[in-house]
Image 1 (cartoon, rainbow, N blue to C red):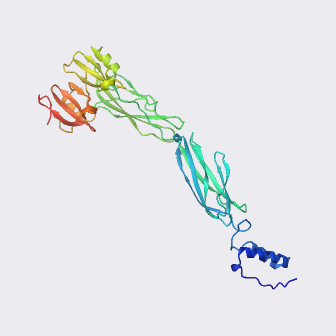
Image 2: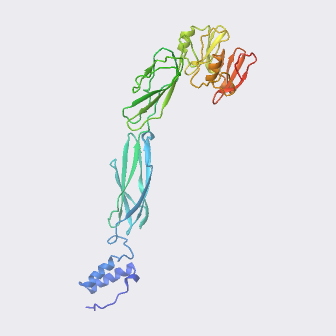
Length: 390
């Protein structure tokens, strides 16, 4: 038996292969006692050259998890989830484990051998979005010794978009006649009950009109004064509220029509026209003649867009809205509402902005033009002296 006083090189200068050789030699030389423990200590690497196949060392550590997206809307239809886990390890990382809240459970090999510091890809997955959900997935690593890392969790908040209020389209009503509104076309993608909140946000200064059924889908009110009434609607799906949707209702005296009046109202008030011109596919409007006068109806709503009432036989009227001032004369920049308040209903209304870049109102042989986008007064012709301008 060889002497136990045989000398060995310092641990810090021993390569991994030399340790294995020394360990094998010592197993032959010694069968027990203190130096057997030294041999095991050398095998573990003593914190030195690492472990390529397992044994000593610590489990892998995932330092960070990055992924996209971190939120999604159910209206997206589907999303693609991808990410990376950054890690350090004392031994080769061989696989990444992945589970999620939908029951997925997979093992993904790490692509390159001998990886101890780097990133591992989270399995790309396509999620179909059908309802709100707090989706979560968990990842961890396994090294060549079978040791598992810490676990990191990714969360994706899948939510429905905010509801969208729909109060309907602007329309013309008759003063003194009850008006019903309808918000049932509002959109709620969350599948929950929709609650409604209506407000009468604008009305003529002297009006005492009250909106009833403000928490229902179909409220109503009776306009008690000629003028413009604005009603706003917001809806809530139990989680989110919509933005406000507004609708404007022009209330005019019974027996008249105005800009925006529907074809049915024109027929009821003005009667059967002398001539009907089906010219929408040529000029963008249909024309109804009443003797030498006419009204024009624009599709797709077939509402009145212009008229010529030069002999005064048509029952047409314009009502000022809420954009009026105390002015007593028209000036450049005056609003349409001020023009109506000061000058009254024009003889002729020309809807020509798409052709000439302005709309024109004629008062006999005199005229006022309104230019977009504000449609305030941009010019006039007062050769006949009928206009109150300054």
